[in-house]
Image (cartoon, rainbow, N blue to C red):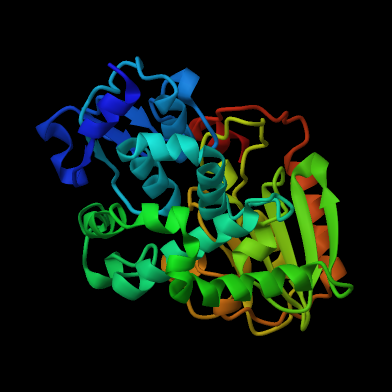
Length: 358
């Protein structure tokens, strides 16, 4: 049986129907899956199909049609995001997905890690698709991580998003101009920020031995611009004018990254305590938990929701510190350097191993 013949039989089912028929689980885990195609830490993705993104694993599966479990007809995911959606869509549209594989890989990486090489000839196309998905998701449904605020379960509510996007994505993939009205506002905002970060008012310092990129720039910018050129780095310290700062541990250390070894993420309360010893403003430094998808260390005002933390830095309040930027940078570098003494980068950390390092 060819992959096209198999692919014609694939269809999406809500996550709650996982056990009602043999089902492929994408960008999620679930007991009873016929096949798991996910980059989540510890997911049962076959070794030959492991990839940085879950969509990448789905695309690998299309090149390996005899993979055990791939003959299952149903496909599901327990949430809607760009990486998972691209993976599900690729399985349901194998011929077009393989024809557009390079572009789809860029879309999944930009959507999940916010990373992209802006010199890549398909970078603009990928950004347009990501911005279209973002805009239509927010306008027609709810923002990422917004289901709990609406008293809904994400695994149930997200099925409505899949039902709307799956039959419409191919048109925008092949003719992005058809969705220009939706993607253009965010696209232009990101492109302006990318240009600003390349300008003389922005400085970047890399500490590759600890996986840290430090970006000094006047004002907060969208993640696609901030993280876009940071592939290979798992920590980003943003230093904004007015002594406003954020340190983020990227999503690249929450999942099983296949392309390169990483250092484990670290719990940040000790660094927060050190900064609070120095801080004299009315704010206190606070950090998200180790297992958050992208833990932030920042001065805390009102508590941000998960949806707000996931949203762009230029859309949330960032408070002024009493500390000079050089002090914050030095403390972050010292903390990471000391914490990683004797630790070697490796692939496929378990959560138990990550916690033991912390």
